[in-house]
Image (cartoon, rainbow, N blue to C red):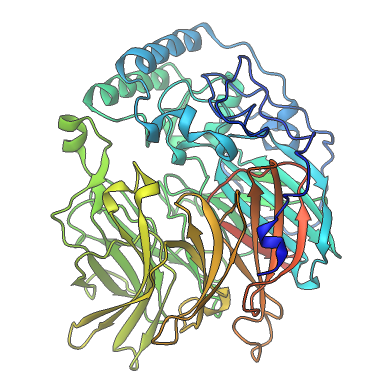
Length: 602
């Protein structure tokens, strides 16, 4: 490792331009760090959005998309505009003030945020604290130079609540915000914008939270009943219409059918685009001409060879799992309901091969009895359940050919990749296995994710498992051209503990013995999910690891964030370029690199 990893930003003074969200009350701190002073313990207040320095939009001559985004009432043009932060807030209606009073009673007396996992003072501390929108702002390349193959944009999604919560709040509950670094001819521009979901737009107009928090608002029968009743009254009064979507679009992004989507598994995709200046625009909620219902996974799989996208949705009522795919033009194909999934399971991710789609029925699922009797979350664990893997033909018309295989102790949250072996008579699955799965939603710092290679012989039913690394690794990616094909290299985030990420590890999964190299970010420095960008994506002769690994990294000692570019072929993932960002980028979830040629098609 070079000196950079151990002294990342350590020689620079805290940024005088860094600021916390503007709030209407006093924040208090118990941290000696000069960065933490304005942020850690946040009271129940709301963010005052700052007007961007520029509201210029760029017109393009691209062909219109095949489906116009769905509009929702009221059709305020400023919601779809990058200048949303400049919109003057309206005075709340009397009914809204009354509903907010009842909401405060629930939050303060019936279901206060007592547990750390739902206490906003804990969850939104330090670099998990929300930030304002940022219009396109030039960045400084302070080390090396940005390679030409990075012309395009790296965009990362994550939760960033528009209003600081008054009651219980889970990390998964924040409004989606996209942080995009647009790169062109060695120069970089950072932009941060909310995904203008229906939820965001309604609450922005109301000036306060209206929708209940799904992961934190229904812990226990009393809390669920009171918040459910209040939401029902809000709906009847016309404050919002759940048919227009209740999701956050805060999890990931996907590019298929010449469209870029912001995704969250509780809603339909939201179409977005980047302007030539690097600004981010939300085009609208997409139901694929009425063919996509309710929701879609935030982890669709894109086959680089065919351009097809494979996806699913899951829910608390039968069919608990529904599988489907999109052709290369982005047209949705018919649903395949999976009724052999006999109870609701938490299906966050899956995998595909050239012949099959692979689902994991794990020990996390819908657990209403635990909510009613024990006061817990409606999503919980069942330690008596035996996890299993379901394999269905990739182009199945129905579930008649699905097969389920018991895999005791294997709990998959994120899949890495899968491929066929033995002429399609076996499949291999790469994924982190979540140990201590009962802590997944409550104490992520106690979770250890062990990357495993699972092989299933479809003729004999024999399941074999091989650990790849003993380290705590998740948020793993590969060269996107190798999705559904046998790959050799994996780039995974190092939990220290999760959800904080202390570095990135490169694994060689082709060898029986453990082969890995790593880049640790240094004391007080934490990053996010890495992403691999190939140098020559159109060159079939290029090595699988011929490219760069990129990520946002934040220094908690100085309060500064950087965008790092690492050489994927070097033993220590050497840093070839570092970009100083104009303000901090909070920790988030999943990202995507979109090449300039693809941005021009949006």
